[in-house]
Length: 174
Image (cartoon, rainbow, N blue to C red):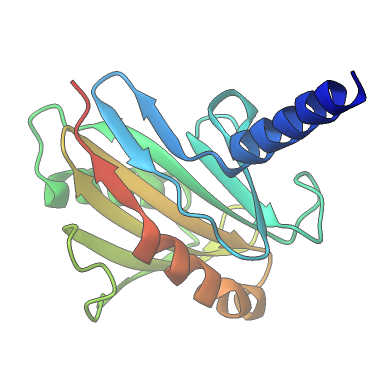
């Protein structure tokens, strides 16, 4: 009996660890693999930040009081190209936050395998510094964001963000 209880406990702990890692996240017509990022804690779908499919924060901090967050939002293509989608997103952002500065960054092959563009946004709402990647997958566009409290923190967390980008994989879902 004790061995059965131990096995059940082990299975429950293993299931929770898998659930906490997110794995594959999907919705109507889209799906992607959430790569684990060392030192970051994930939350997916209903547990993620509002408006996102996945959100991550430094593991040594709480989700609500972290000095940085990474997240993925999903947008259906609706007949647009990635360039058109990015321009719409940035125009809307510039209108809502005219004090922000947006600079397009070269990707330098960091996203081989997925078409995409990356921008840096200084002085984003809340005085945040952000790196934003616009990626195209089957059926959807994905916006992967690193938002940090200061430019120094954004640079500090940028290696983890690039790790997240390199491991991100969109897939087709019928």
